[in-house]
Amino acid sequence: MERRPVSTRDRTGRLHGGRESSRSSVRDISSGRRGGLRSHSGPGGRTRDQLYNEARDLGIEGRSKMTKSQLLAAVNRKGGRRSA
Image 1 (tube, helix red, strand yellow):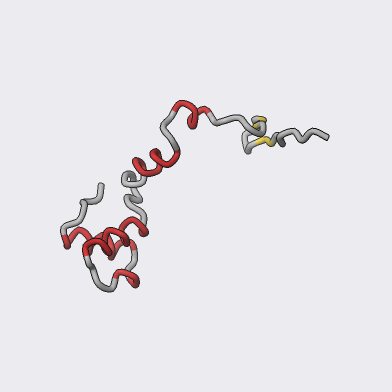
Image 2 (spheres, helix red, strand yellow):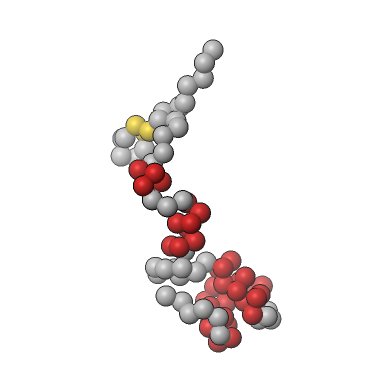
């Protein structure tokens, strides 16, 4: 018996088949590159993990117990990249 891809409907009612790529993924850059480019902008800025890794690279102590905002302030004080 041949297995066919499962089709589903999204919340707007449009039918989505199994192996089709979305319009944005076909016309846009790769998802990995897109995430890397877009993760540093907007209201959230860098993720906590990105700030943590930067703090580690800068040798900031106590980083594991810091919140995202504390990490951002510490990284900025130490001379890391500036947030958007």
